[in-house]
Length: 293
Image 1: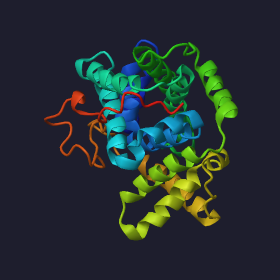
Image 2 (image 1 turned 180 degrees about the horizontal axis):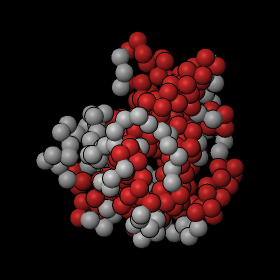
Image 3 (image 1 turned 60 degrees about the vertical axis):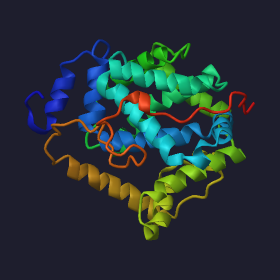
Image 4 (image 1 turned 45 degrees about the horizontal axis):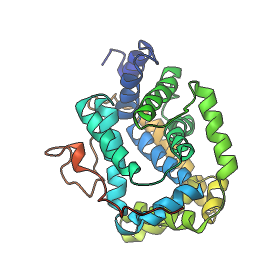
């Protein structure tokens, strides 16, 4: 890491080119500077995708969230971490992408839905960090995330991803306006995801975990899920707690080890990544004729 104390990684990021060096910038940002924030933001990014009925219908039809919610969460988190840590063109990154593409290839998924999911991985962490980060993202980090996921999307066969940061954000917003609406499958997948998050905590705390998640869901997401609003006191507590956390983290020394493949909540693959490869990850094959449409 470059010198500069708490802001040493930022100095390194400033010296890099957000187009040419987008993977290195993204790896620093997600692995060293904001691992907690990226993890939480990407969890809420997935919540947003469940508000599109065509996406939630597919997820509901596969049974993954009903039968193996923890494994599906672990597969997604670990595969994306492999690509981010090692690079999409590294041996482990290519292996992880093959697992992802094989999983998606079993189903009829529209290109627009794939583009939308990709867009949430770019912009939801940006919006989260604008609210709760211990520092603001540098413009290099914002652009690097866009170019990184555009490159990942190309390797997933996702077509027509805009080549402009603002144009891709505009696509995301318009797709949400056009597709977000309540559906029973949204509610089922969203509820099972809430249950999964709550299951990570002792039973007496699980009600408060659910309320905490609801406190962070915007009104349009709650409407698409059919979820109630959290009490005002919970919203104030969650927002205050996240801002207080940012103030504390700002005073801490910089990380010297990446947190990307350090997954303490991984329940499915104990000891990962030691003794495992990305090819060991992934859900079991689905019935060949499965098509929620």
